[in-house]
Length: 276
Image 1 (spheres, one colour):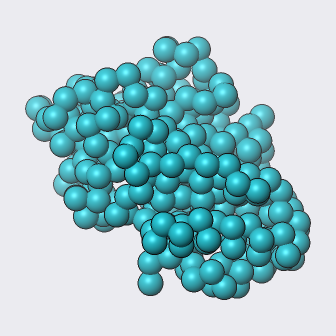
Image 2 (image 1 turned 90 degrees about the vertical axis):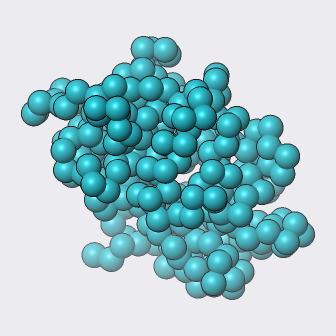
């Protein structure tokens, strides 16, 4: 069984793949809103949520409708390519495999992306849980601070940039001071003995909590801090909204944690970007 034909065998929760991609798209929209170069645009078959940032992954296009054949795939890719070309901007296409309705079109995806000068940069399972499972081991105590000041923002940036191997200037451009206060992209930093050790963020959209930017300082990994801040961020979002269902996109390193928390795969997110 190859990667393209495996979606039919993914486990299912009550959460459909559209909830995963809709929340992901909303997280980009939340970050783009109010930016000087930010744009949120709906085009035929394509949603644009672009920060106009140096970090091309946040100048994003998304499929917004099913694609069932190569012709339709090519049309959507060219619409997105032309949009960013007109702005002389590097960009990324975040593609949820759930929108690719046949195995044939999934097999054509990489070739189609190469035709608009995109290369695969990452693929991540899209995970979902109807609720977070109870702990199976002690969760270490941390002090949690919502990112609402220059110091907590700098700590959030520092851990994230290091963990995700992104230049700090790029990360600071994406997560600027606008995310503090009552911003819908709610960011948290966890501290142990006064030192920042972990981060997480949430976006609530259409009765779904999206979990993002779970990261742990390199010297503090394998101590349960990622689980602690994940539980806190989700619990706070749930307390504020009454929502329990959660979605995320996982790295390979995070899968063991998320499986233990009750997450199951419902789709796959492929990210193609225009940087050589």
